[in-house]
Amino acid sequence: MKNFVETDRIILREIVLADAEAMFEMDSDPEVLTYLGKSPIETIDQAIESIKFIRQQYLDFGIGRWAIEVKETKQFAGWSGLKFRPDELNSHSNFYEVGYRLLKRFWGKGLATESAKASVKYAFEKLHLDCVYATAEVGNSASRNALLKTGFNITGQCEINGNLCDWFEMKRLTLSK
Image (cartoon, rainbow, N blue to C red; front, side, top):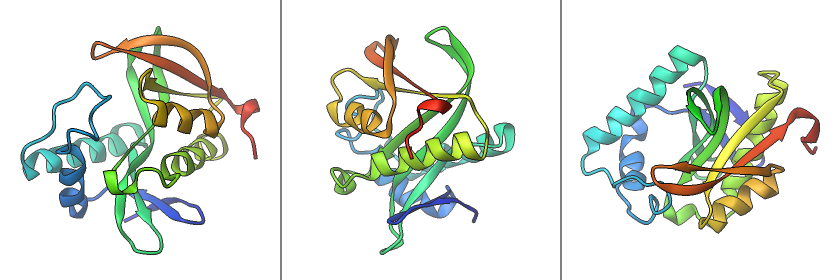
């Protein structure tokens, strides 16, 4: 399994099939999915399909969401990282989006911000991207705050799955050290 980024507290590594139970726990929790416009998954097979989809993105685009592993405990805390978006969203297509999703027991520990900062750094330093994007439902103050702490700026709004979302952008020059 390949590690992409390491911070003081976490490792961002490829998601593997061994993560299926933790992915199931996360994606079957309605509270985790509150602002995503998605229904909770109901079977472990659905978690496995999600992992296979992410792993296919690694092959198709050379990038995809990464597992957040807590260094101290080796626990899967959720996923984070970059996703290449070939589809159109908010008049953009073929762009890289930063995102994250955490198991509820890891909320409020700063892991979303830490993983987003590491992902942005990877985007600019390793992929040499000029700009990365993110979205958060306007009512999701925790996610919005994590993106703002990461250094993103709100530059507009868009609708995703019937939900009004803030559109965030960060250009390479605005990356804070």
